[in-house]
Image (cartoon, rainbow, N blue to C red; front, side, top):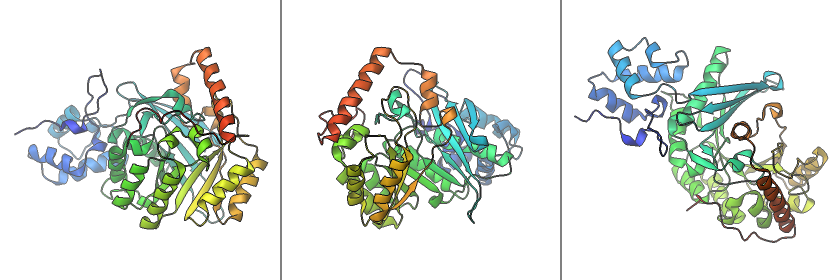
Length: 406
């Protein structure tokens, strides 16, 4: 009998010795098969998952419900946690917790836990923003992760363990995680199989047990991925990083637009809303003098008018080496008024955790160090020129980012 761990679940990076897979990323079928091969009764799977997702133990050796020999075998074949180290920074009077996680191969990823106290009849919320890739291939110029470039896809367990890490902290304070958003480092729909595996584990009543409607998956516009989600029919929320409603400008702000332009992205999102009955959330980072003009507000109102959609306007977080700044609040409010006049539900979101670099990729970029000064100067000059051309309606002639396929 082959008693080896299936190679499909072993995390590895090029040139790095494979680390044992994480327990939290095992599907019920794989775990059940592994236990059955060792002559263990079926209820052992429930005991393992209760330990992994319950938050009361921190290692395989502490799972007191399992016999010692089985704990030894589990510890030899799997890791209880795939996050090797975590640098935790807390700001906003304890309302924002930014975590920089180091993985087995040295890759850095980030998660952000945001607390929202109860108010006006609404219950308190604890929302965790998690990463799906180390780095990102999309290359949005206002995003610190985009500047880092693409490292690798995360394994399912590496995604789930960000949630387990935050959940343990909350449980210790007598609280529970209420919402998860895939809006951290990376493009979730370019790592869709593992993201779906993570969602399955997080939604499964026998594992983490969070309702699908409390999970949001964000994309910068990977149309085939959106279509695949629609075919699967999940009930979690789809968020689209829109940032501009005119193709010339979105070519600059979201380079993926050169592969899948706005009309295709919004058409796929509309079909998803119709198929699932779930409202689409559109995210717009507001950049002063770039995408916050009356022309852009009108274009977005025309694009989304009549859709089952909600728009979040978010002032740009300060990002090193980018020549742009956040739009002033009066400008954002004017933009919001244009959308609301068109019947589009709109929210202005305030930034959290700026003191600790809570924007996506900032801590990892800080750890990576400063790029060469000439490279920074070239990047700033290019962005200024490209955004000026885009404001005049000129489309980019640059190809879509490398690593972004069909």
